[in-house]
Figure 1: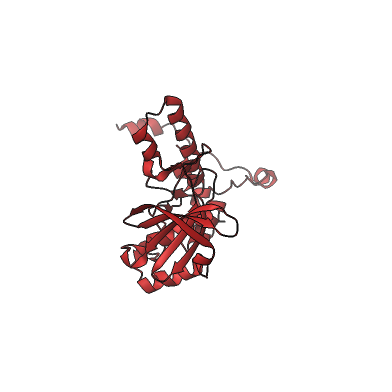
Figure 2: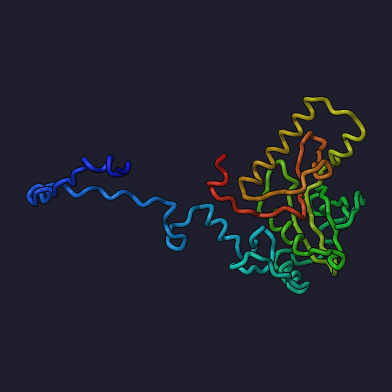
Length: 253
């Protein structure tokens, strides 16, 4: 004799309720539909999803400017002409030499050179990153950097001020921090524990802000941490910064 028979042999089918009783009883409540079962095509959009949608015309999946095949999530390679067309919609029209006077060259690298300059109308000191676009292998990353910088200003981030196209060169104007990079400091002196903690706190505040805005920096290093003579600590931008949408479930640790 099977175990199923032993369990079920004393089971009696419940009798159907009388018609009079069933008519008088209130209908059972219908529970709300679980949010996870709602169609992605009809459910209301959250604020985060609205933010993602609003940026979709500028930043594609993965955070980079370009044309995206939404069925595959792959980025199509964009031409130099498309890059220049997009840059012209971002930069300020005009001659930056009429607004800024270069002073000193303070750095150079694969992406270009950095100069200190004076804003003629105010006397304010700024930094200008000058890049020859013909020598940039991934020009769309420059567009991505400018767009992210322009939309995300914070006390612990080197803030974007302006940009210009001058022939084949792109000028990006940023605030200037005279204290140099953290790399310069740690190679010249030994930082005490309290100083290290203070720098870490300021950098973490910058990262907390960027992450709250769905931006990943992806290039945290001492070269990209700049210091002001007033003690300010700021994180500089990176070509590798990207917009990335995090679902609420991903953010719940």
